[in-house]
Image (cartoon, rainbow, N blue to C red; front, side, top):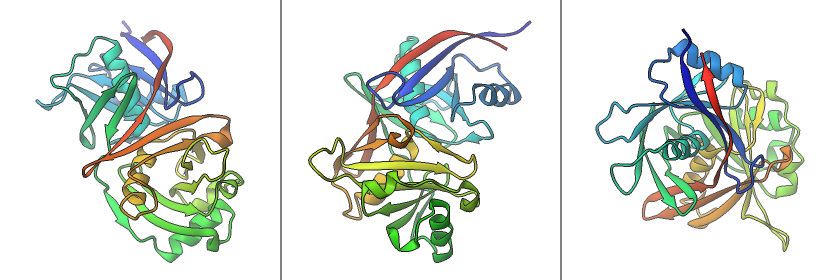
Length: 278
């Protein structure tokens, strides 16, 4: 007999449904096998699919496993906010003022600010200067001269991000990447948004070399970018970023540093609700 589980699909980092990044969430998935989770994530064909479970850590409110179409991730940003939204929507009650999510990267704190959720940026697994050869690979993948990269940093908090900055938003939006040239690198690109028409402080794009695709709105990348840009003096302690413009999306990410901690926030919209039979 197949299992019947609650299934929801939400849109993360947007106040309007279909303009952010979609996420599939399966509830009460404790009895699903690894193979079933991986197969369902391939079938949804979304950047990530998550599975909610009972926590194993005494301080956690729930546990989540995060799958792309090809692998499991220890942490990802928009799946964190989307999974938390679904957990709360299904009657989840946190033990304290903050919600504590258990995932492969450990415990992640999440706050509620009205209708918006925000997660605490997890520690970077890798930071520091980007090697010359790696910068040349990134430039080849972006199809730009390496001289157009005005700053760079390893900014990996799980998915393997390496980040570069361009001088202006127009140059960023003009990029038409060559994914094979990235040689498997996951590359985040950021540029300041200037002018009277600006709707955010920065524009961001995320190119996943391992999947050969652009991600519409990426919480993990924006978390790691903030951990680079704010300490380096390239961004203020509170700023907003837009992502997905080149794909017809209007994702909006709110970044705030409180003390030593950086919080990554955004809106989540319910789009689909149903049952999964697997």
